[in-house]
Length: 395
Ligand SMILES: Cc1ncc(COP(=O)(O)O)c(C=O)c1O
Image (cartoon, rainbow, N blue to C red; front, side, top):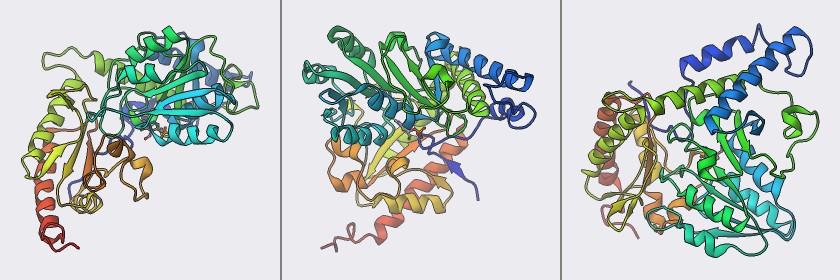
């Protein structure tokens, strides 16, 4: 059976070029980057080169790049590394659990958090962040792209607010990296977390931009790796893979072909998919529209509700037909609670539960979209036909 993977926001496969660059560092060039012999120096050089690539990606100095294990670690480091008892923290109610759970942890140590709610569109209003600032506010953390809706947050404006008020600013850019032009100077942040596996790189590897002079305590202590900012023997193949994925992403964003770059192509495919799915009666896009105008969002994502359908049942029905999508954030799979993001945007529980996220890989094709557009209406029709809700027999 044909399989179409439309869950890129959960994870992505390695691009072949990434795999090729990583390969030697598992076997022939296996050295420890801290060793002084030739094997160690080869590994060290690979980490150094990767750091320069990541500095280009972030638009920062090499010394401002810290390699780590991914988005969760970066998000945790920003919060645990900067906040002390008595500090006030501002974030949003649509962040990933790597931020929300860390906020819960610091609450036990006397750090109060304000969770700013989004507009119905999924967008965070910068003035709501400004209004939340207090004399004790030490850190603001806002995501670049939401993992469930793809909505891009106005980080530059929030960066200006942080600068004007003297507050540190962290961006969880895990879902924005590789999808939008990246520039931490323009964003105006002190810290920025990314993860390789969301951008066709390896799992368990990421990086964090830490602006020079940001007084962040390391999460892990031990050896003097990463300029004492993150102890632990460097994951050399992972770092090499992250850098290759970032390099490919930079080039794909710059692609100036007449039809537009990879991202324009992806947006066209996503829009065609969305328009096709919306032809089914009783459906709609979650958020995105603000006073009749669309808000910016990542080119690969759409989140759609289906009346009289149970989202989980639809995910399973589509999986059985060879299509992988997600009924919420994959990082929460197993939890039966409706998506906290959709709920924060004002959806009721039933509609939030009856929503699907389609997130396209960069390698998605017209044929993939055609296949999904064949499968979704059939699956919805079938589920509605057997649904007690649709039949009006529900209690
Ligand atoms: C917005 C966001 N932040 C953080 C993470 C966690 O990243 P990682 O899987 O690299 O720990 C994810 C993963 O889904 C995410 O979507």
